[in-house]
Each structure stands twice: as structure tokens, then as C-alpha cells.
Length: 312
Image (cartoon, rainbow, N blue to C red):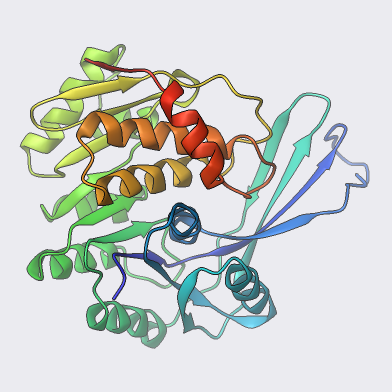
């Protein structure tokens, strides 16, 4: 039994290339692409595995693209369980513009998953609950019901498994309404949308997050603030971390690395401030490599002491 199980309903084979400048209408001849196994929960599992956690990635997979995705994940040594689907696993394509340092990300909707297929995924998860945390990460695939995450949260809560969720839209809103979410990670924009408030400063952000906690939507809220850093809010306290200054190769995968770093610290029973420190270090380490290579353990450990944490 794994300490952590991640579920990725709509994984992607991440393809990344680069070009001097992106221009319309003309053929753009890119550099040799790199490929990584992607999707929110898959990425969280990859980072947790590197840090030394016992983790299993559960995800749907179909066609030749799904086979390549699974082969790449297997080469990294990540334990996984594939839920076969009829249609082809999607690709996500990103282009790094070397002249400006900008990433252009093209995200496809993904395959339509049949009822019997997503039900098979739920059946597997019900039979293989993790010892410590269930991570629900990424958007749902076409054909999946919008309350799929909510179903899993309720069932995990019934067996005493805390749930970490990193998603958006109606699937996230329905999951939060169950009262069984241990942690969710909105961006500042997503928190603004959830609360309908501008949230102009740290105090506003902490107050809004604690309001959601008081309503029973989650036990902890980790707010990613992009270049400004991040916050971790509980019912009793709020902590703020400044972003680290590192040479940025890409921002893709930084959020998934953040979640994994926080979970790694949580598995080690670290206090709230230290869980935020690990999360920010993992997020910063993910910026050092192109594409979705994600963070490396040595970089996370090296950067962690540099993260400055202060109470809000």
C-alpha cells in the first residue's frame, strides 16, 4: 500500500520545443522536441518519487500516445496503475520563445472517456486507498461527470483518507462542498473567482482563505501567487513565503511540484511553516529545467534553506 495515491483523469504526453520567435501564418521550424509524461497527478507522483515517498500514480491511458506516456513514466521508476480507455491519450504542446523567454502552451481537451472506463478507475481507487493522502489533480476528461471528484472525496472521507485537490471549475467547487478536502491549492485568480473579492493584499487573501475553511470547504488552503511567492492558510494561522530568485527555464510544472513538496513535508509531520518552505523550494526547483522535467531532489534540498517564511 502506498502512502500517497494520485489520480489523473486526463493525463497528457507533454511535448516541448523552442523557436526564436512565434509568428502567425508562417511555418515555424522548431528545435528537436522533448517529451515527458504529464498531467497534474502524474507530475505530483513524479516529484514525490524523486523525494523518496511511496507513491502510486493512477491514470487513464489509451492508444500509442498513452503507451509512450506510460513508458516514459516507467523509465522514471514511478509506480503506476493504468486504467485503459478506448480513445487516444492527448498531447499538450508548448513552445519556448527564446528571444523573449515566453512559454506558449497549447492544451487539448483530451479523449472522451466512456462510463465503464471512468467507473473502472473509481473501482480501482476504492480497492486501493492510500495510507496517507489521495491527490486529485488536473481537469476531468470529456465524458466524465462533473461530480466525479466529489464522489471520491466523500468516499475517501468515509474511510479516513485525507484528500488534496488541485483542479478548477465546477469539479473543484463540487468537491469543496463535500467538506472532506484536507488541502486545496488555488492560484490568486482562482481564489478571487471563488470568493468574488479583489483580494488586494496578504491580509485579504488570508481572510478569504480562512472564510472558506470556516465554511468547511477545506482544512488548509495553499495559495500560489506566481512571482510573488505563496501563502499557506489554516484555521488558526497564515504563512507567507517570498519567491526565490532562480534562472527560469520554464514555469510549466511549478504548481505540481509545489503540491508535491508540500505533501512531502506533510508526510514528514513538518509544521505548517515548514511545509510551505518545502513547497516553495520544490516550485522554484522546477523552474530550473525546460519543459515538464519538473524539480530534482538535490535542487529542492539545496533551495529549501533559502526560502523566507513570515506569519501574516
